[in-house]
Length: 487
Image 1 (cartoon, one colour):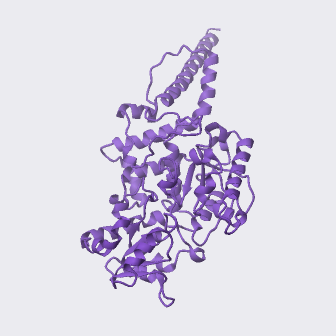
Image 2 (cartoon, one colour):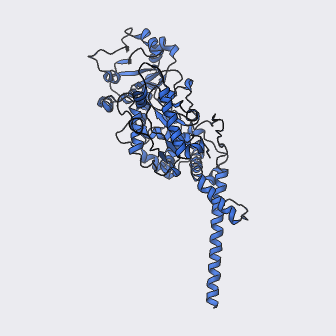
Image 3 (cartoon, one colour):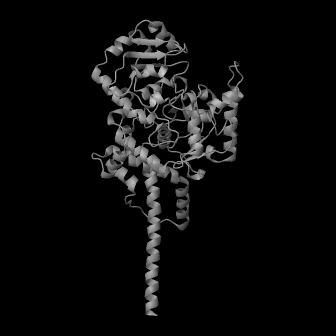
């Protein structure tokens, strides 16, 4: 009997200790979530006019309160609390934890990124991962180490739910060749690839993708020459109504954790079909014009990539070596679209052999050969701000000269565009040759090195590869999501 009594006493102590440990763990996690990231507040959407904090933009700007505070958030360091909670309140805490687990996970990711910002020395683990990742040189990034940490946190945690609603061809499919190819290629990757990131359980998702194609909308619903975008907006309105009626996720955040993607020029117009989508959701757009409602704090600039025939030209896959001769100072060929190109052509078309400027290239000349033989590729906007010439110039390692107004460049929250391109005010077009000739040879070589470094971030692979353009787009979405504290 004494042995049985002793065993019962031991069991009792073990049970009491386990219960106390479980309670302390629950309370500690709750406090971790509550105290994490004081610089971010829950965003309210009651009047559908969302107010967002500035996005990571430059990742090194993510500054915490103190290193100790961040460490506590990240590793769950000991938090001293009174533990005289009732059983009912403990149950409520557990239910609360389940409901907020996604946000707590994002808080930990933010803390991890901030710890990287604060760290004076690179950890052995970080150094090893950076070496294995084969990231380009540091000068093309705003903060290489912070970007890497953010990217690896994305790989570790980020989950996307793709809505199944909608019918082909407008939904679940998009163009995979020609000028809007990036739209269809991303939709295809989200539907059939990206297994690491896609989840079939919407309760685990950090963001929700609405996989409709603006390009196929235009082809299927738009009446040519009518200039009436109402059918596109109506489709978007109907789609939002369906998913918000069928599922609780849209209404939970008023669409703030949802995203759409469109490369067609009319994508921004179509998004106006839902005021909540336009104001709250993440819009991934090629037409990233800050003067027309594009908000870098929540929207993502999508690089425009033209795939004529469905593939990158073989000539651009293997640009000449750095010491190869490039006989032309600059090159451009394109139609009179928009307000900037007429200024360029009027000033330089056929005026100077160093400035190879054409409206339309003669049929016996090859467009990509000109790019590969030019030091600078002129990239003026057309009717809309984006131009596929920018990515083509990167492929050709021909320094892009960006002639645009109000264009938010892709991945500019991570990349330093001044390290691999030149931006010239449109008012300076008459001085374009003077500006380019004034670039020292040493700087030009650095710009070329920058192009070789960032090239991998703009490559569109048949199957997405780490750090390529499809992953960079997803990372841009991750940054917008991680900077929001949502219900």
